[in-house]
Length: 90
Image: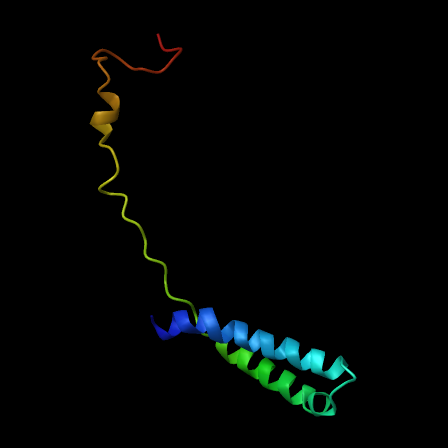
């Protein structure tokens, strides 16, 4: 597992969760500790999200269709040996 895949799988959602938790901490009236550090959590989450969102994900592996493609002669070799197969031709 590369750093880019760890970043996309864990760090970016963690930064988003920290931002959301910081906003919820600001809005709740029960814990003065959470209310006091809600802005700090939101700020750290925002900075972490800005950094982790700049890291590009792993490039996707392109599937090779060369082995799976049919040869043009295999497609057109359907038992017809004369002329064009288009409709409306004279």
